[in-house]
Structures are given as structure tokens and as C-alpha cells.
Length: 471
Image: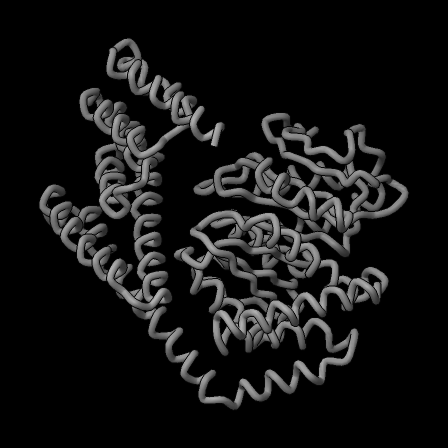
């Protein structure tokens, strides 16, 4: 059975069960619970936040969160303040992660929360970051209109999946300005708008990462507003006016800082969100004026040129990465070619006068880095440690300042029995700021643990951790 069919069955049966079986949860409210075991299978767990006013006397909206590394407590903490403000239950899966089929996790997670907590079946939402965002969007599409909304951070739909019909869900889309999936988020927003789906774009300064708390609050506020539009909660006129004023102010700020296209999209969102709640004639007039302007046409053309620059740059880097995967030349020769190419790209970025061009090149480098790292991780899972080593080395060449790829090279070379190279790469990772001493507890390093070099690396990593804590 396909995952989408499985999800449809899960949600159809669970929606019925939750209405019948919701009961008081013997769990403290108003505090993040880092790990709650699933009753049906204790090998599955999730982090949880119940708002302080939670009781079983009413039904509550719920946000299901999926982290790409299975660190469910991170998104729960991220959304905690907003969930308290708007009265959401937040659940973060500790089992859903990249490269793992999420079907069993979703089935067990949903079965557990619908039995234990008083959930409003009309207000079920999902969020995720990166691969976790693809899980959230896949859930919305697969369960066919059982989610009220998706908060997608750093990624959109799974590759090859077409944008869904408007009735599927409401879509809050966000990414960092130098996230390699930045253009994907914009393309998805535009495609959903063509289908008349409710969509809200919000970008934050930074790379491929979970959104900051301010954006998390904006996301839940928007879902709360959308619930008023759809009639699943009563209209709060004061809240509506406050949100309208905030969005208008944000649009005007974008008009000044980011130009016509960002403002045009913001006005479009305001019109779609508020047309049934209040008068929006002034905003409609501003959008109409922008739509007819040469400024907007130039902005669209410039944006497309930057997307093409990013795509060309990614292709040029990934061509070498793929040559390593396909063993077209000796790895050492390809490393040299990649180092030369990366030197040219970095020079272009550093000398660019236009910040938008710099951001596009940064996104391209980050995208190529992610491709090499994830391909190496996939090979590591397949126990092809030689190719994993080569791809992690590629990642280190693309981003020489990054600590993580050197640690990964150390890990796989230790598995291959090359203790000297493993220690050298561990040293490089610590030089670049790696600060989690638990990473050295891997049994792959057991044969190195007694050496003076390893002890020195361990001490330096502990110091990095202390420095980070103190700063």
C-alpha cells in the first residue's frame, strides 16, 4: 500500500477514535515534556507541550512537528511561546528523520495523541524543517484534506509531487534568505496561489535552519486567523485588526527594503486573508498599481536571473560531485578541480557589489554542500564507507569553514581502519569549532581512545563546548 493511502486510512480511523476516546492526560501542562513514550510501542516517542490552560472540557488545535534529525523537542521548544499564546498542543516526533519511511511513526504518533489528548479534528496542523517539511507536506497531500494547515520551513513538496488543490490545506511557507531552498519556497508559493490556495510567505535572515521564534509565532497567528476565515473559531475583531495592521506594516517595510515584488506578494496575501473580514480596498489599489508597473516587471526579471545564477552554480559544482560518485576520474584529480572551481565561485561572491547576487551564490554553495553531505550519508547507511568518505571530503571542500564534514570523514575513515586520517580529520573538526563531546563517544573511535592525540582532541572539544555555553 502506498504511503498516501496508509495516511488516509490512519487519519480517517483516528479522527473517529479521537472523538470517542479523548480523556484527561496525566501530563503536566504549561511545560515542555522532552519525551513521552507511545503507549502502543515504547520504542516510539515524542516531545509534547500542552498549553497551561489545557483541559479536556474543550477540543484543542494540535501542531505535529517533524525534525529531519528526529530531535522532536527542538520544534516543540520553538513553538512553545506561540502555542501558549494561541492555545495549541505541540507534538514533536522523535522517530521521524531523513532517510526513514515515516509511515509507522505517523501511524503510532497519531494513534497515541488522539487517544490521550482532546484534539479538535478540524484544526490539525503539521510543520517540519527540511526533510521534515517534506514529511509534513506529504502528510497534507496523502491524508486528503484532513490537515487544516502546513507550516513548511526550508523545503516544500517531495520531488516530483505537483502542487495540490486549494482545499488540501493552508500553507505557511518560510525559509532563510540564504537557504538553498529559498527559490523552491517562492516557486511553491506562486504555484499554490495560481491554484487559489491560502498561502503566506515569511523569510528570515539566515541559512538552512528552523525558523526563529518570531516567525513561529507569526505562523501560528496566521493559522489562528485562517481558522476565523474558515469559521472554525469565532471572529475576534480586535485580533483581526491587529493582524491586519501588522501585515500592512510588514508589507510597507518590504516595499522599502526589498522592492516591488516582495511587496506585491505581501499585498496579495493581505487581500486573500482579509477580504472576508474587513475592507481591503486600499491594499487592493496598491497591489493593482504594482501589478501594472514596469518596476514589478523588472523585479520579476531580476529574480529569475538570480535563480538561474544559483541553478547554474549548483550544476557546475554537482557535476564534479557526480563525477566522484560515478568514478569518472581519480578522486584526487576531481578534488583539485573542485577546489579550483570553488575558489572562483567564492571570489565572485566576495567581489559582488550586489547583495542579492552574493546571497544567490551562497545559496548555491549551500545546496551543493547539502547534496554532497546527504549523498555521503546515504552511502554510509549502505556501508559504502569509501564513497561516503569521498563525498564528505567534497562537502569539506565546498565549505572549508564547516566542522561537520570533517567529523563525518573521521567517522567513516575510523570504520575503514585508518586511525591516522580519522585523528587528522577530528582535529580539523575541532579547529573549526565542533563542540559536542558526545560525538566522540561513538564506538568507531574505540581504537583511538587511548592515544594522546585523541585525548587532546577530546579536551579541546570540551573547551569548545564550555566556550559556547559561556558566550
